[in-house]
Image (cartoon, rainbow, N blue to C red; front, side, top):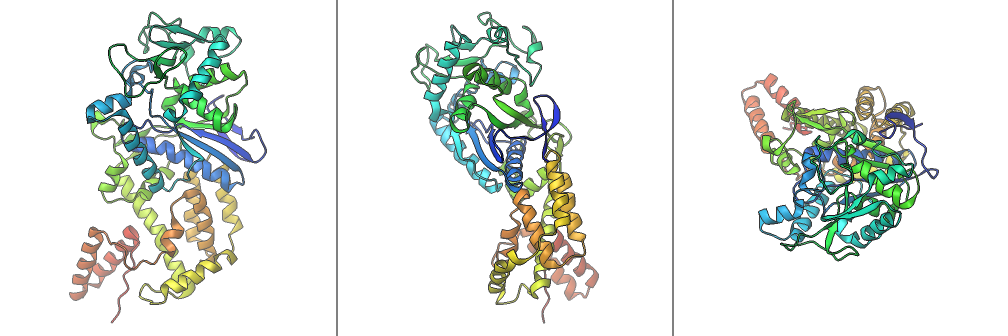
Length: 484
């Protein structure tokens, strides 16, 4: 039985979907004004692991991820998401482009990164700007129910009216304890410091790139309303799982719950809330001002494949902080390449193949066609599932993989079982195993090691040559075969 730590209740709970064997899942995606950091990508990878796990366990998953391309203001950094500049408008000024250009560029970049990280695509990457009418309609419903009011800069959600109607606000966080003068800067027009914008009015002294007419005047949606509107459109009024980073527990997700349940009168908005922990960098916090808010581009610039980053994420439980260093990423690369190399060796043992065999590609194709006939080892599969059902315990799942690597089993069965596990791990093991290795680009560092090994062999320094051969296998998944 799958157990999930539900942030709504703060306890491990048995998973029971609303509809048998069907799961409706929503993940808060990026605000597309800049490149996401590797901290953001940890959350998106968590979402993919959950999606893959549910499918592996036999669930039919309907999954939506949003792209926030309007309404996310800079004030959320200081505790009030209704203040500051729109992040896309600010980026547009900085890059001397329009907000629409910014949104298009970084949305495209995100989807490219999503694919490189080998994530399963959602039903839709749902853009806020494509759903303005749905957001306006939802605000109208909230207003009609008596849970909204107007002040000079927009339409706001009335928290006290919501509570007086018998609802509890802020269950995911300590928002019910926030007072004026704490982290939230006082706004004298708000009826309660916890109230939040549903619709913001455009400034009278400047024209925004992104603004729309509405029953209340020209403006743009608040940050929170988009997730409720788009989740309801594609997944219904109540969903099974909502995923996001732990930073969203403070305001964004509690506000989603309040506005959604106020509009529909149905509870809960989501049965299970899953939040991923922050990523540390070199043992401390990550930030642009510290110069360590690394992006996927930074990872690739260092010569890593993004699958190595994915493996790194798997080494830590999602509810615990994990510390990123370049050394830890190098260790993940070595482990990932070592796993691929084991698969290649088993393939060679199974079919007496070598990388110099002219018929390699044909033999591999034949092996792939036979693969479904090989056995998945039930003992290791049961252990793997046990790890997955323990709140998506990926470090334990990896431990099962490495136990299997060392097990005394037939090569064919090892390959079949690990490739089955990769339906969840997402390390592209089948592609890397079955694609012919000839003609693929060899990293410069590996080329230097090969040259160093050749010189060692010329000097009859067999110990050094063997050490370098092992290093090439461990680090790069490259087998050096010596022929006369």
